[in-house]
Every structure is written in C-alpha cells, then in structure tokens.
Length: 301
Image (tube, rainbow, N blue to C red; front, side, top):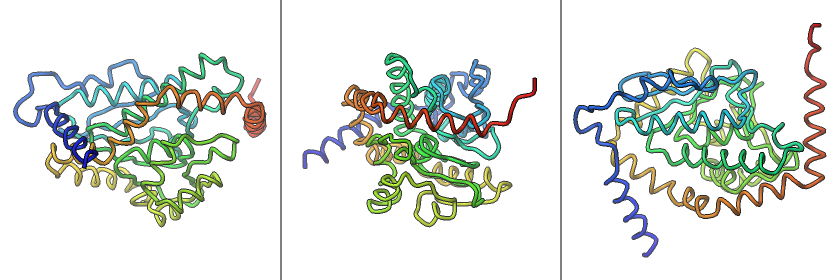
C-alpha cells in the first residue's frame, strides 16, 4: 500500500500547484501570445485557440534535434506551461514530409566529452519536460519519425500520422550500434506492449504508418489535408475532461517513469557516454555519416 499512498500524496501536491487560470480572468499577459516573438528560429509557436497552442519544429532539412533545437523546444513547452490559459499543445513540423529525423548523429561522432554531456543532458531535459507536462499533447506526425523523432511522438498523449507507405516510424538505434536508453524503450512498451516493443527494439525496426496503426503505435492515420484537423479533434477531446482530473491522472500514470530518470540522470549520462565512446560504435556512426554524404547531390560552384 505504500506506493499507492505515495502516488496519492504526489497527486495532492500537484493539485495544490495547478495553474488557476481556469478559475477566473487572468491578470497576466498570455505567454503564448509572446512566444513567437522570442528568438527561437528553429521552433514556431502560435496560438490555435483560447486554450491550445501549436508548436512546430522548423529546422530544415529534416528537423534534426540539434542541441539548439532541444533547448528551444524545451523552452517553448515550459513557457506554454507557465501560461494558465494554455491547456493543450499540438506538436508538429513545419517541414513537409518529416516530423523529425531524431537526435543529431553528427554530434555523436568524435565530439569532446563535454559536448556529448551537454547534448545528452538537453535530451533528458526535453523528455522530462514533454513527457510530464501538465499540458494535453497530441503529435501531428507529418512524415518520417525515426529514433528521437519517434521518442517525441511517443512522449505525447496521442499521435496522428500522415498516411503513406514511404514514411517510417520507430526506434532504430540498434542499427547504428547504439543502445536506446531504457526510458525510450519504456514509452514504446507502454504503447505497443512488451512483445512488440521487444522485437522492434532488438531489430531497430522502422514501420510504415499502417503497421504503426495496427500495433497501436499511432492512434490514427490520415491524408495530409486531414492531419491538422484530426490532431486538433483529439486534443479537443482531451480538453473536455475536467482540467485538474486530467492533469492529476496523467501524473499518476507517468510520474513514476519520469521520477525514475530524475533520480538517476547522472547514471544515465554515464551509460550514454560509455556507449558512444566505444570504438565500434564510433566506427559505425562514421560509416553511416559517410553514406549520407554520398547521397547528397553535388553543390553548384
């Protein structure tokens, strides 16, 4: 019974600190209204309605999660959380055909340890912020979403994906010799179940939208002209639930996983550094980057 009591206490604490914007007019200027004026060139934030904000990744060509993108996205989510009028967030992409290509692999290759440490800490901070936010969140997955892009979508409450058999989603870290952190793995398991996640993680499997829907990895697959509307409809449904009850339930369901990482962030960082510094892993990453450069068309002189 002790864990249940701890969850009860944590829930009571959360309720005591919930924003009070829904209880009466706010005297504060909406942070969402000013969010787009912040110098965040890689993240676009705009207000969709009274209680909903849209956050879009805008880092061409593939929305790679560079260190700066991680910081800007984390900052944008935290600003929205501080606005008592905002209760929901749509997470999407301003780049056609891509949600996010995931973590910045170039950062992993031959980088100094302090650069790697700063980068992974930013990844941890973003996940903790998005996964445990009080905001209701829906990912509008407008294309490819491998690795870290998949992590972003799985961290949202619900997911709507663009149809098209050419698109892929999944945690494919093992294909590069990298071990996905257990908190990546756990959110996949929560969504698709133990057996499916085991196989997907072991194989580093990327699947099409139709397969992702079949496995429960996404909640809906729609054509492009319906993507925004379908994601908004799901967010509206979440926001119809009484605010405090929805937020407290989300904390109850997700708080334990988030707290587990908070308690061992240093250990998780050490595990990541050990993996990335392995010569075999560095060799595989180098070969992968070389293959990418060969695919690029030659630049005009």
